[in-house]
Image (cartoon, rainbow, N blue to C red):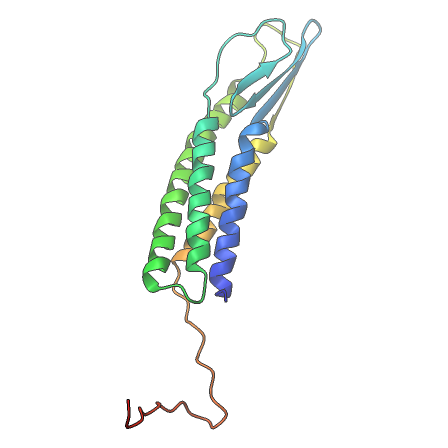
Length: 187
């Protein structure tokens, strides 16, 4: 009923879509400053940032809409890859699955590529100003890793979907070789 390799690609596409869908709800970046007079944490997720600092100044890019739209495209690509993974799928439905998954993956990689420089900027610029004896701890959040792993899995699913796999050989009948059936005289 299912082509095993294509089914693996479809399952990977589903996993990638789920990871991208939930990633905006987890932190992308976490920073903590500890000094004599200041002790606060700042958490950045795809919707904005939150801090327990005395003052909340600044803004961050909202990445949630792009991540959720990428997840929706991956879900559409997943449906197409499941259709293309059936043994009865036509070559045109397999091409549509590969094209759809390729488009969804390209968008997903594009969204992930916009978040990476933001993350490196947050890590580089999160530091206290005017506090000489402060300790700073920064870490990459779970949401970023979910997005990165989801984008990588989406790429793997797109590659698997686009690969040409050899279909199984027809089963050999008990008499050894397949013989064409001759139409009877009345047909």
